[in-house]
Length: 296
Ligand code: C2E
Ligand code: MG
Ligand code: MG
Ligand code: MG
Image (cartoon, rainbow, N blue to C red; front, side):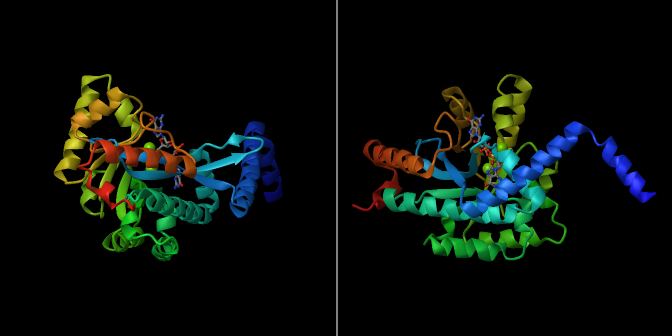
């Protein structure tokens, strides 16, 4: 009976679904191999101070190039990794590469630029995540305030409070916590007070989608006002042109990220970008204090 039912189920399995399941299995095997081979890398996108245009940090974004697929989109990599548990080794690799890259950028620019690393709830729910973070910072000779962890509202589904505890410990030790994709979730705003947050990142959908209508603009202005009342700086994502920059700066965003400034770049290009900006900033804006920390 059971056998027959099973066979029936397989027969009813839609061929397109079967194809995509096989495709996914294949991709999983490839990802496993890529992680071992060191083919999963990070690119860095600057987050700039909207007042000076100088880099405040870089966001590390996972990148994976395969011969037959080209660049696999980050959301595809991440959802596959989360479904298969590969997110844990992948996350560790991303963190390590991000720290390695920012340590070099800090050394060569002399500027205390930070690195923001996206962190899945699954990583935070594993005991030992805090130890991994501390060991990684130490391995690269970085102070804890060089690191920003970007988390999403999904960490609220943390009933035992494990993720919350880990974040609190890291926060006390000086790691910054940034709430990513803010404005797209459905949870109540009351959680904002229950997490150790240092920064909010307005999702790109909110930045680009709200320019057109008066209602949209009012919602965006309201959200920014809330974060200001909480005393948290706002990072505006998806600034694609000067008009976006001016609009968001006018609304009170202090930091920004987007194609207007730069796309995510390979670490060497990010270093060159930062060197050019920091050097230029020194020349044109002598009041920027951290430039003076640059070694001779
Ligand atoms: P996110 O963390 O919100 O990252 C911002 C996304 O917006 C990035 O897409 C970035 O390339 C893109 N972006 C930045 N500026 C602009 C712009 O001006 N215009 C447009 N159209 N797009 C812009 P990406 O790299 O494809 O990453 C997508 C998402 O995948 C990320 O969204 C994040 O949720 C996730 N992700 C990426 N890397 C990692 C990682 O290492 N770990 C985890 N857990 N998630 C990651
Ligand atoms: Mg992010
Ligand atoms: Mg984001
Ligand atoms: Mg986003």
